[in-house]
Length: 623
Image (cartoon, rainbow, N blue to C red; front, side, top):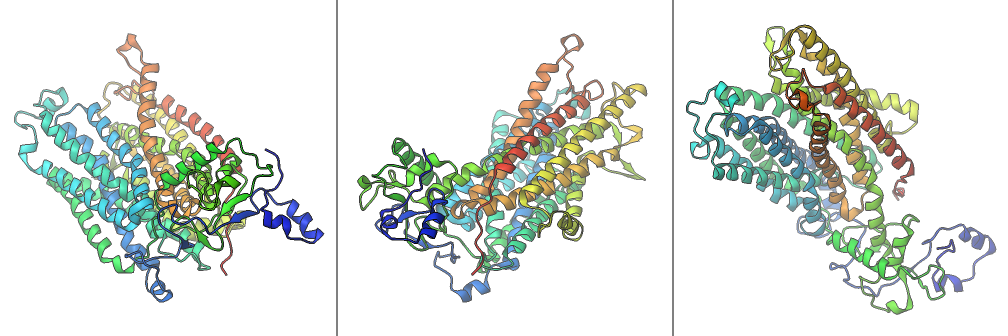
């Protein structure tokens, strides 16, 4: 391809001093690009200056309007929506498996798979919500529409739990009959209706999760000198609201279910979502908005097609005019500032290579702007980082099920208080809440002295710290599980896998719970902030969706890994027992935890390589 710089004819004609010519020779490809005003409406929306905030009617906001909107007041209205969504998400993850098993009389494995698929799909489908927000609706309207859909789904689940019409007969169905599977199963249409409203709820989450964090971050002025500090604190407080929702789900919702029934438990989730929706709409006058930039998929496709069409063109050809871009501050992408050229993925630069045959009114499928090409480059460069967090999501998914199975064999009493096993996942959430509360008072000052970084650690450093702590968490889980299993066999509890051992406390699990909670703080909060800042201006919802997709893929990966391990370790001579045997005392959960430790170490090495290769986007000082 060569290293000859690309210069427009105007640059070649203008005479320059020798010193400047020598300096320009050190410039990289794309330092000089052609600026043209001939391209009008090619991307369906005209031009914008930078990423200036607009009002709800998509009109540019004056400085007076900007000063009266946004900031922490607007952000707090948005926090409530995410807290309610996560309360519902974790409330369903804790209660729906038991509801399907005890009330709908579905096999436990079938119920668990249905809920795992719901959790995975609700996260992976976040790409759809991010696409709609960035392309057409904007983040505000995407949240408004999908949070209403979420509420409808929760209302449907509440109706199912409260109306006998939607439930199988509960007559002659005691605890023994449920365990033996002799209860009347749910009719096909009843399960169809339940699955329908469950997936409607998941579809609602698809539009909330990728947009709420980005919309909240939009409320802060990028021109402010305190912008970085505000953004750093925002993502920590945002995740604090997520954690608060999880704590409520693991405690209050479980308590309501145990004392008032399934209808009240699911109804409390719907009520919480309804209140948060009302608060979100009340805050409407305080919000700042960003213009949707048109279909990001179309822009990506245009770059790929244009680059392919010009694959044989040479950067050193005498016919080459330059790299194409609009003049001044205007961008061809609505809602986006211009993006400087980089030398990564140089093959894509051919999409912006202006040749004489492109003419005065170029076809966007044959010629793209530098900004458009750089958007695609950024999306590609971001991929390895969220992909590295799939392993953390896999561990979190495994902990939700495996550690609960461990807890059933342990003493969950605190003095005279017995903690329900289904409440055990609250401890990672509590550790997250505790760490986030002390983050700026302990971690930041200490790490600032070590690293010299104003925020204690960069975003990628925080992701890496989280991964290291997650490795320690799963390694400790393997050590404790080996001790627990040996204790059970030694003391005659080998066949009593649902009976607690009175002399072995479940609170040894707090070590792995707290470590994984701390890991989540560093990894996920750092990842969300990283994706928001590094994603293209007009694709920030899709950038945030990367994190949700990684979480969903972790859920699916956990299911796939479980199936592989069961098939590979099954012992036909001992009735199919495997590492993940239903009887935890005859299984080898310790081996499985150590397998996760090994995979996590390999994943961390891959992350280190990707992080070292990654170059942060250039940040220009505030004028």
